[in-house]
Image (cartoon, rainbow, N blue to C red; front, top):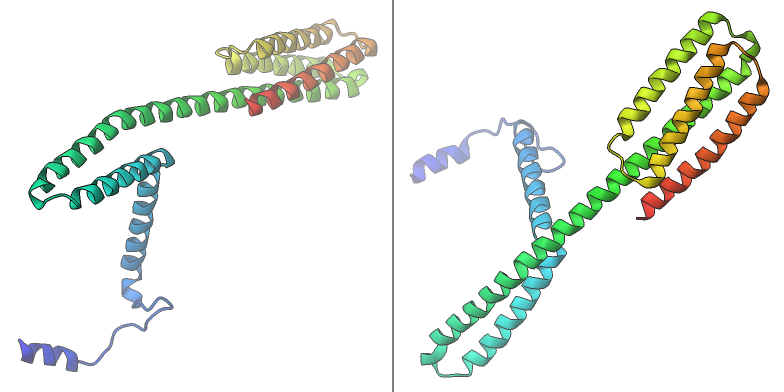
Amino acid sequence: MLLSGFLLLSLPKTGAPLNSRGVKGPHRLAFHAIQVSDSRSHVMLKGFVSKHYAVLVIVASLVVILLLGVGFTSRPSDWAGWMQAIGLIVGLMAAVAVPAIQRRQEAELARKQLRDREVGYARRMQYLCGELSELQGRISLNLTHLRASDRHSLKYTLQDYLHRLFESHKQDLNDDRVVLAHELRQVANDLIDELDSGRTDRVVFMALEKRLQKLAHRCQVNAAMAERS
């Protein structure tokens, strides 16, 4: 064994040069895999030991230290009883605290999911309102130059908008957004009626523009309230 070890040490070093981390080139991939695995383990451990469990661990540690301090002042024959008492107390603490922590975490997760859903609905409504305002402005700007084919194409664009508005908010139960969606549908239908009529009454389009401006402000307020909830 000594001879084989000596022969191995005496072999010429023909490996690749060390990189900046002191690792040979052919082993960079393995070294990187070890780093990734270690970082993932650290993230999993950090996620498992949350702040709620950290408090439980600290309190349990203090109780154990206190009981150990009292137990070691007693006779050695009583130490087994003290160990059993410590285990029982820590077990009771865990049995009471862990379910409470889990319920609190579940409630926090549900609240976060509800907030994210509300913010998503509010931002989508704000985007749809802006889309309709942009479409109304484009129609109003080119009102006198619209041909029959242009009106037909714009009408189908508005019908597609109405379909997307319905699909994106058909499960939205927020009272304000239900009203906003209803009023946006009314404006879109009024635009379709004007395109079908062939009229070029700018007074009507100015009134629609004012309605959309008010709706845009209400959508902005609704989005801000959803983010603060």
